[in-house]
Length: 287
Image (cartoon, rainbow, N blue to C red; front, side, top):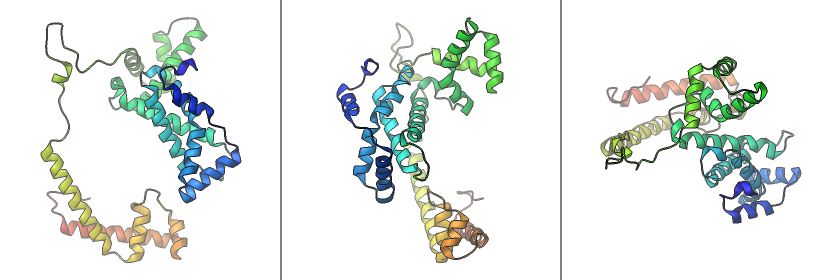
């Protein structure tokens, strides 16, 4: 309990009072949400797993992110897990959701820790979360401090460069600096005064909004010219968040999956030709 002193105790007490669910109850609540979008079932699932979210958040407390923010992100991951959970798999929801909760928190940390907001690679992200524990383990096993030999060996094992580990050690040892900090003791100039605003200008935003709306209208116009069957295929294959397979579409339409592929390609070509005939190529580059 002492590990959570920086978090709201009322919320902590609430989460600890929530009863654990049986496997059968979990599956029923998940089914209710996935099939009927029953919010009471979703709330029950989220409430009963709050202690899991807080427990995982506490493992990331050394990254100097407020634990309440980590819990909020963890809850988002938890809800994603409810949406994605496969009821046909014989696995407890807590086991499955732990991955989504942890992934949501790690993504949030990477986005908000200023010293690593530099477009890290997958290997660097892995280093960011594992390097401290790996270094500690190596030091214990070898009864010595983590040195260049250990670092090179670790780089070879992980398939990263020696310098990447060196850089990550520096980032983990560094700290954030306030944007309101003055450059020197006698200076009134603050750090933020030297930062370049790389956001689009109001004029660029206006142009982008207009262009996006124009393109959207052109696409809708081209789609409406397609036969209903081709329009359905494009919608299911290209415009849906959950892409439908050729085989599923073929079964639904009463045709082979190869025929679905042919109709999809034909529809895409029609859309391309329709858009190319209407869009000024000097403004929009279509390939």
